[in-house]
Length: 155
Image (cartoon, rainbow, N blue to C red):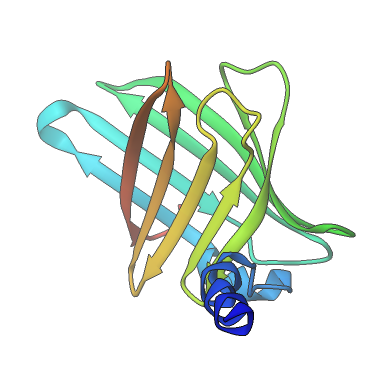
């Protein structure tokens, strides 16, 4: 009986472990991505450099009705403890580090349970589409925000 429980437990634990071990596994994120909602005057863009050395550098910008309303400096780094996503949005004086907790060849989940919001940052690549997602709890309630983008020409 104990053996069956141990084997069953493996099915729950193994998917939570990160499969991505090299920065090059995230190379599909490289390039320019955007979401344009002309009806609402909204343009969201992200640009990611290709992996080099121990990092991938990225920047994001939100423009609403011709005015920059938000920006974020981002990087993904290979550290001794694994791969991390580091975020520094306009509103935060400090960087926030999220550790890669699970992945597939096209989806990457980074987590920081101690952060206020979000506690998870996710990226999913599907051909010419990249969806960023942030999620976690605010005042005890689950919240998630998706950022669907399409590959764009880098200008």
